[in-house]
Amino acid sequence: NLQDWQDRRSANEIIADIQQRTKDLPGVEIEIKKDQAGPPTGKDIQVEISSRYPELLQQQTDKIHQFLVQKPYFMNVEDDGEKPGIEWQFQINRADAARYSADATLLGSSVQFLTNGLMLGTYRPDDVDDELDIRVRYPEQERTLSKLSELRLQTSSGQVPVSHFVTLLPTAKQSSIKKVDSRIVMTVGADMAEGYNLSLVLPELREELPSLDLDPRVRLKLRGQNEDQQEAQAFLKNAFMVALAVMALILVLQFNSFYQSFLILSAVVFSTAGVFIGLFLSQSAFGIVMSGIGVIALAGIVVNNNIVLIDTYNILKGKGLSSKEAILRTGAQRIRPVLLTTVTTILGLMPMVLKINLDFFARGIEFGAPSTQWWAQLATAIAGGLTFATVLTLILTPCLLMIGVNCSAWFEASFQKKRVEN
Image (cartoon, rainbow, N blue to C red; front, top):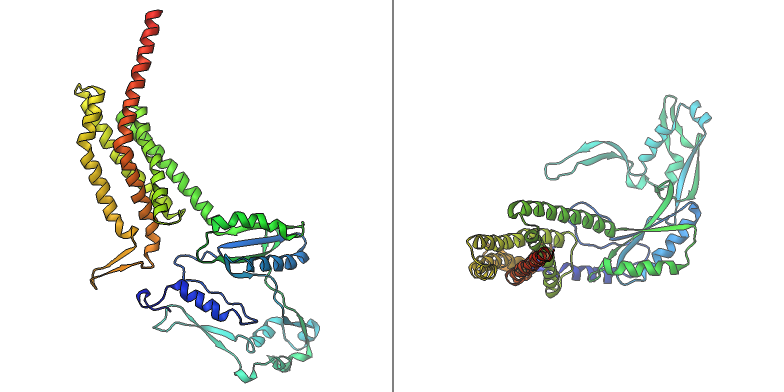
């Protein structure tokens, strides 16, 4: 367990130090990664290798494994292919076993005394959350391979040596068999190194994989974090479109004007440019989940500011003022509430944008706490988009209102002219 983040180096520096110290240890696979909150998601990138010819998989898996190891932007590369080693198989002569009243179940229970122990039950102490297994097995000095042939089974005929009806055979070790769509599959997975973005690395990886001269009978599929991002992107895209559709329906019913409803919704679309500007200035990546939620949350604030502006314009227009005069007075009257909404929202978000953590109990201010990385993108997206949208609300929206009035007057004049000519 790491110490509090104020009393130690960053986790990335500690991980880099551990990798440097363990890189020359042969014969072991070492995986180092930071603790991740939430459900397990597996490796960032997973290359799924499948074929109708299982004998081809291991060689192609090893080739792709070595390819990923050579890339500086991948770490913790591993595969689920077969590892060198042997396993002992018990070949039971069932006729001899029946003569001694023995069977495979009894043999398996007895062998467990030599391996991981025979499980009798579970127990949960008061100071732990998970249950502990209660297992029985031979003393450590008795748990050897030579004891396999000396093992005796307790049967109804007494103790019987397993050598009377069992033959021990050493065979090549076989890993677990994994199938997808009725095909045996092996997977090579890797995590992204610090400072690299999967969305930028993935196109390069797609271009380089065909250059490995893989067997054409082998099929590759890239899975992992990119699939999760695509699912989240599709969900947020649908949520954003549904939100716009509902807002458009309400606006048309309230204002009884398609053009004014279009102006309000166009400000929401234009405000996304401010999101990217804010993320660029803060040198933050566009996260599909947090930044996407920020864009959806931003839409409500932007719509509110434009509703205040256009509703005031309609009220002044209804009092008999000309369109130009109503637009000018609307801008003068509503600049204060629009700016107050923007300034108070942005100031409230600045602690998250600047990654400031306020400790009210210890009366301290901390910068760069690990928990702030989750909220910085969300806050930056809202703050940047709202700043940009405020300029649009106070300048572009009045201009578009005047353009709409002029276009409407031009169409009306053209229609009247045609009627006179006819």
